[in-house]
Length: 289
Ligand code: PXG
Image 1: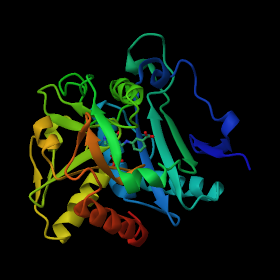
Image 2 (image 1 turned 180 degrees about the horizontal axis):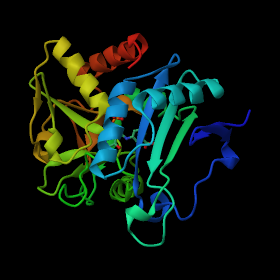
Image 3 (image 1 turned 180 degrees about the vertical axis):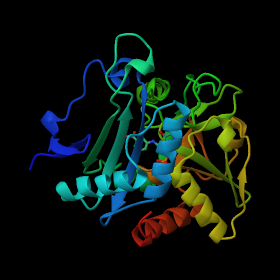
Image 4 (image 1 turned 90 degrees about the vertical axis):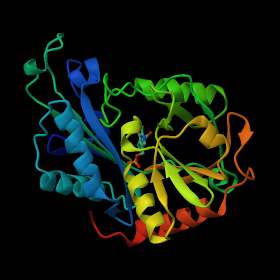
């Protein structure tokens, strides 16, 4: 069966789902997006993803031509049309077609696209053995240039860091912020365990406010595990007992080596494994929203 893509209120076969070459999303990366997952037919934390999409849009002066209720219906309609219960959902809102100039006022028709597909998971081995990552030399966008809190269609910053990681044989790469502090990875947030407590960079450290990150913080608090959202340096990473990443695609994934150094025992640690187990339970239990 051909994948059906939602575009501006219609479901069409993927070959027909297209935007104009004059779309400012294409010409300038002028738009916003979300990546979400559904588990057993329910979208995990849909409301949090919609809120982030709407905030990203507001930050770039883009009005989404749908209500959140309409977007919710469209998301489920797209999942059902493709008979997907465990999948990946990409929401994209572009500025729409305009002229070859920058002026967003010349764009009249924001494009709303929903793609629901089967998810490509990391191999089980990555979760059992843990990831090796490196620190990229490409830093996260300076917040005064383009706030990392905006999930915009311009991901070049992260793509350049991802290339550095791939060239070093790593599927993820650590990015620092403009102050040299630890920010996040190219598509995942980072956590450390030290003396049995959890550490993660704060929202103003130049990170995307991850939905998975927020869920893991809640889980940790439910385990009476103190969570510190504080600025971190690479030194903190190197001396941590455990390190793991969180993200919609990876969920909770252990990191066992950073820049060639073993983290803690060099094996996935007990806190990481317990949080991963609890997260797996949470995504299956979670009511809509
Ligand atoms: N940081 C960045 C820069 C991200 O892009 C996260 C952290 C994790 O956020 P969530 O809300 O997912 O916990 C992201 C999320 C992809 C892909 O296709 C990227 C993300 C999510 C899903 C898929 O590479 N980025």
